[in-house]
Length: 514
Image 1 (cartoon, helix red, strand yellow):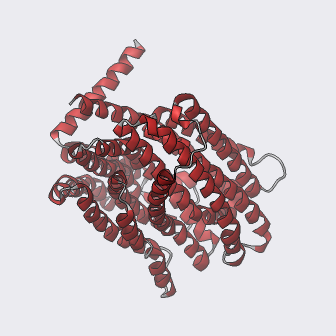
Image 2: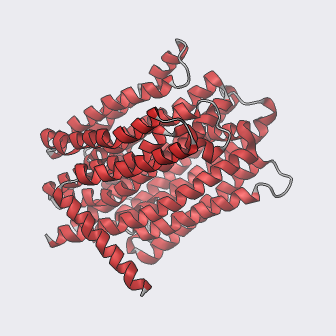
Image 3: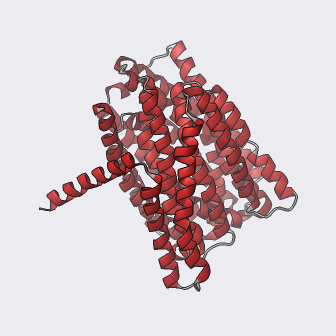
């Protein structure tokens, strides 16, 4: 019981750090996006998004290894096997170096060919697009090498350090915005180069922190065939799953470029940034809880693991509902406040993408549970195969005359199918109860949504579209979602836990101010 309470306390503390980080990053990112759009213009902003998207398509290699590194470090910590940590970390660093080289080769061959032969970019901007492509490629390689250090921090649940470094990163990106107007260089090229410098600085910061705080992060050249094969096999199957995720995002971005040009990419890029900021709310909570899911499995405490999976799915939904409900209702008003001039399709794109975010975020704990077992072959091959259908189906829909929104409708439909399949697979791996999940997560989420949406939707439909009504709807949607989540969505024990932690933090603040 003491261990369970300690885990809850650590989870609450880590979540608090991550949310402070998230609120700061979200505010700065929204401001930065608005200024970058203004400085670069719609066309150059669209070019940057689609060119960087080509490079991001190869990031599935990076993402798969990130999940693998976190899993093996968290599993060893859960087992208390500290002697094996340095071997795992050193093996992961060596593997990432090999992946970084492979990524660079793929980007500079397939990616560069795609840029010159398949992209719709004005001829006079091709040189700028080329340099943005090169800087994005180098940034990706640096990001690959930073993953073992990033994963080590998260596995040790040092979320305060992770939050501080992330805040420094977003502050540097804010500084870039002000530097864009200095000098006579091409603004698009300058933007890409400065982002590369920021990525290099963050990599050095992660590495320095790990070397000072974690003994296992001191790299030694170790090549144990069995360990390397285990890590590589695990990462290989994860790679398939992350490839499907990349294809469902960047693949659709490339389809939109091929059918409609860079202006639609700008709309998609803006919607994706707003979507990404909201996604951070769920991912921050999950980032805090994921190491505990792996550690409880490693300690053979399946009952605690099941509770964590349920709580992760349910809390992620409630957090996203509080944010996405006002955005879905007053999408245009909020985008006009942020951007002033809203590109066509941005409103519809954002609403549809938020549905995808909610489905994926509620399903993400299934992936963490599967990762904890180490048996990801079937899970990733089946789920990844389903998600890879998104792009070819969307292509057929566009060929038949579908509008830009149709690709996101396809995405939503496939995500629903993948969600059901994910649960069935994880249920067989760790013994999750379908009845309990349906009752405690699905039914509570649906009921909370109904209760939260009735009043703000009624006001939105019945009253005229004025600034006062828009403000009332936004505030009421958020408050309604939070209250219904607390009183309808949480169990009695969860409500008591939230109250206790809230009182503790309030008491600390009062004592500091005395």
